Length: 443
Image (tube, rainbow, N blue to C red; front, side, top):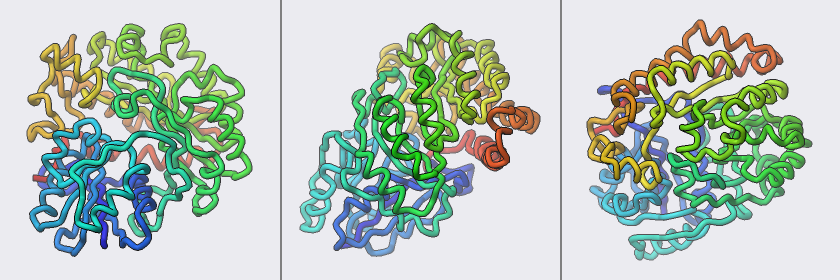
């Protein structure tokens, strides 16, 4: 039997195929390959950089679907099914919208792959693929090493993706991760993480955990085990980590260069409404103290903001940009708030009749990447879209890239850190401008 794994693209720019130069390894497909029995031939194609050979013989196609890639994933599925090849769809979007996904596949997989994937493959081998597989959550990658040979020759960014945990214990209104994992947080065995790091050649890692520090004590145990490995790594974490001095010291000692941190907003009313619990202790005034702690430890922070909350105005969004520039964050994302299906935010906006694009922006032919998909409370949808682009444009202007480069405790802390900043600033500037207004799907 031959299994073909597909990582879909987001879409296209006018009439041109979009090649994502900031692409990273599709870790989920490496795990899926590792879960597949050794007597099954496995090939992988990444739609972000290469053409998919639809006419190449295969027995089963598996596509990992995210919300932004759903339209393209359904296009790919249709091409294979037209040729009589069965398709199984999985991933976060399928779990959030199984009824929709089922219309575009022979089979759908709900939940984490570790627990029923072997059964799905066995059924496919006997021609008895079931229409739905519904798995529960649990420990990630139990006794499992990612099959990284499927990434060979794909020219991904030069860092290996790892995971220690899945899920997050917080319940932010807008977060698809909280909806997917139902606020559950599962940690992998530390010795298995260490073993996987030792079996691959790179010393620059990205832990893809939704919140690596959701469990402080578990994270401390991980960091103690990482210290002897002499690696450098980044991940995603919540700002409440700064309240634990021991955690911060261990994190830096283990090789942490910085984290993506969801600041989301500097307005306390917005934070309360979205339920951003780790950011609410003492109100937003404490950000100054917490940012000082991050700078003290030399962490190159990627500050993630969402704009378009009900208390946002054009003036407050301009102040948010000033806040990001004044604090010289290494990187910052100004994401237009997205009503992801299955989230409390989507349900609330739907009840208030504020959704645009007929409520299915991820499939609508007129929706464009980084556009607002709902009516904000204190501005128009078009204003919100333009403000998002303005913030990204200003933050990534040549003048402000130079200004941020001169932050002495992070980007100028060492020649190595400055080199990282210089390389990725240029890349993210290019990709940020190129993706804006991109059409979802190719057709």
